[in-house]
Image 1 (cartoon, rainbow, N blue to C red):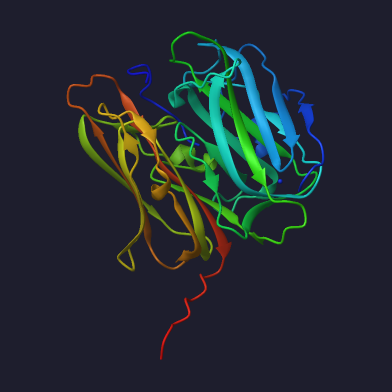
Image 2: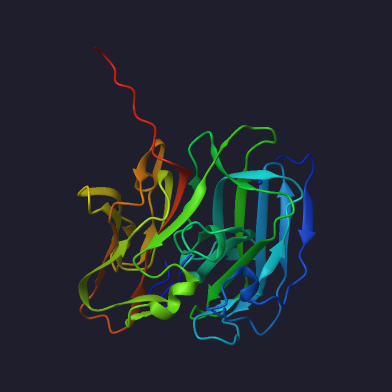
Length: 343
C-alpha cells in the first residue's frame, strides 16, 4: 500500500456478436456542452488515447497510457481530455467496475485514480436541475456495482455519452498509467425496469451549485481538521422514488457515510469503509453496499440529511479534504408494499 502520497480525492448497454474496438477522436468541446459551464476541468498538457471496446455484454472505456505526474493546467488532478461516444444500439447497464493499472497490466493503488465520470448529455439529471445526467462513476472506492436482478439504467442508441477521467497528480513518478471503466450490459431483449440515477452528498454534488458551497469546501471536498469531524447537509428530494442500489464514495480517513430521514427519524443508509491503521481507504465491503429488490422509499415532502464522519490523526500535518456521496439508483414512485403472510 502506498502511504502518505495522497490525502485528497475528488468526487465521483444489448449483445454484440463480435468484439469491436473503437478509438475515439479527442474532442475540444467545453464542459458547457455537458451543462457544466460553472466548473472547468483541468486538462493534461499532452494528449492521451481513449478507446471504447464492445465485447459480448460489456462496454469498456479505457483511458491512457499517461506518465505521472504529468503537467496540466489545474491544481487538482491530471484530467484527460473529455471523450464523447455513442452506443451502436439501445443498451441497458446492469452494473459497472473500474480499475487503475499500468500498461503491462499491473494494478496500481486505488489512490492513483482521482475520478471517472460517465455523463449522458442527452438526458436531464433528476437531482441537478438544468444539468445532464451523471449516470455512473468511480473514485478510489472502485467498488463493483451490480444492480438487483430485473433493473438497469437505459442508454439509447445515438445518445451523446461523455467520459471523463483524472489521475491524481501527487502520485510517485509512474510510467504508462491507465484506467478503465467497464459497463455490464443486459443481453439484448431482456425486459428490465428502468432506474433513475439520483446524486446526493454532504459536499455539493451539482456543478451549478458550486458557487454556493460552504467556505471550507473546494473541488477536493470539505476540509478535514485534526480529530473527529462530523459534517451534515440537509436534503430535499425532487422526486418520489424507491432506492434499489446505493453506490457510496468517500476519501481517505472517512469513517462513516449515512443518509437519514429526519422527518421519520429513520436511518436509511449507513456505510462504513474498510480502512488501514493509518486511515487510508481500502474498500467498501460488499455487505456495506446497499442492494435490494424491495428497496426503500424517499419522497419530496420529508426532510433528509446526509452525514459523514472523518478522523484525522492529531499529529497529521497534511491537509486533507473529505467527501460523502451516494449515487442512488431508484425506480419512480413508492416502493411496493410487502405482502403480509399468515392470517
